[in-house]
Length: 298
Image 1 (cartoon, rainbow, N blue to C red):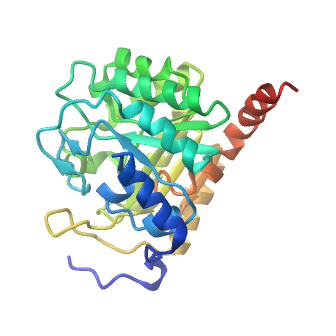
Image 2: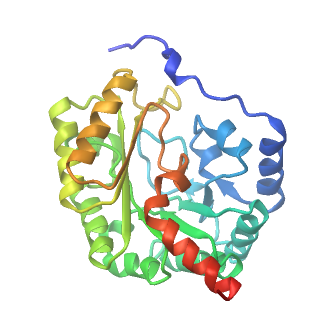
């Protein structure tokens, strides 16, 4: 089914201004990748103008071929051993109180890139001890020993996206599985971490399926949920089945909170890392204050 043109509530800010230019120069100078660029995020202009970006490690070529994602699929580049230090320096230069790091999937690596993840978290923490670190990770094929490698580096927020309802996992995520992703999130929660996940609407899901997904997420004791509108990156990707209204997004937010989720961000332009500092304040605010006071010797 062909849907009409984008509605007015999906208008995003055009990239411009000194803040945007400063982030772009920083990313280029440090030879870094961002999911903002690689995934064609509609919020790039707004976020970069605020002086923040979601840094993407392990290169910019993914070993998976999800049908919703604009990130290039193919044979990844060699590991860049200097990347963790450059990420840490970029976080320091941006002066981030809360940083978000993500990665492509690297299924060809023995540990799925978990050791690089751990090195990056530790480098960021060493260079920026008062900064809250949020990670948005792949599923590591459900191998929990690799998940533990990431968790042992002590990120503040552990995020892994379900992306869509259970029925649509195969056509949308291709190599991923709903139960496997839930298992990764449950494992992180069992170790005492603050957990976060996200889903997209507009891929053909039914209301009852959305409700069941929210109930599953709540049953896994996930702390933070983001819900946003799917946008087709190119004609090669899955089409948009419908434009979800702001009123419907508000309904799902209300339901999520009623089910016991701590924070639910739900809206057309909401993405996993969109205003992540504000989403996570409930969970990272006290920890950030404690680290800041410790550094100040109070």
